[in-house]
Length: 300
Ligand code: AMP
Ligand code: ZN
Ligand code: FE
Ligand code: FE
Image: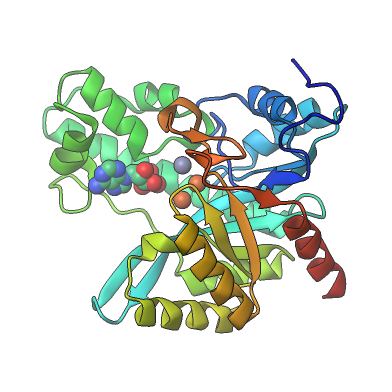
């Protein structure tokens, strides 16, 4: 691991609160991610894999001896009702446990979600095999490790020549609307916020730009989530232009939400996004945001 000489670390004073390892859909191992964070000189790194703490747990051992402040986090999918659509949309929530790991009750909820996912995967394999597609659960799980999901189905269908592209696999077989689509049970965004708060975590709305709502509807949605217990808003994100970052910072100030931020680093899966600095250097997340999160927890 190459560590820059002290005093010259380019990202000293900065943090990244949104990153993925190969325990979900990132491509770096937890150890490699910690080494990279140390190399670029980040003060703190949150690992926020989808639906699993396995990457964070492994990273702890790697971060133990170094200067990096490793933060426990997770990214959770939820269903959010949009009156304008008359339907639910998928919304990502980040949950942070910056005082340490989550309590047992939260892990138990997570294990149940992982079990639901495994049942869905099983049914999805059955549905695909029913259509004459020769795949097994073992083959899919070999690609997905602790978090096998539809992206791994898509890769396998592509490898085996059943789909012309990753996107084609979703359209023809596993995406919503495809004949062999199998739904996975998920909580509403409000319920998920409640579960995180009950576990003394900090629920944060991830990449709010992806709500894709008008300014007015967006504000209304975030107010609704704040009433449900939301504590933070992801202001800095690779998909947010500087103008959007200013907009979300103003919204966080107005609604008294903790501003957070991170690159949403996925390694080679999103090669244009760099740890700590985002897309074309569009983010710098100051360390004070993490201090504010910890102060908030100490107050409640
Ligand atoms: P899962 O949690 O196993 O149901 O998989 C959900 C993931 O599949 C999402 O996070 C996306 O990365 C991916 N995904 C879902 N729908 C699509 C789609 N229509 N096209 C491409 N990727 C998709
Ligand atoms: Zn991801
Ligand atoms: Fe996300
Ligand atoms: Fe993410």
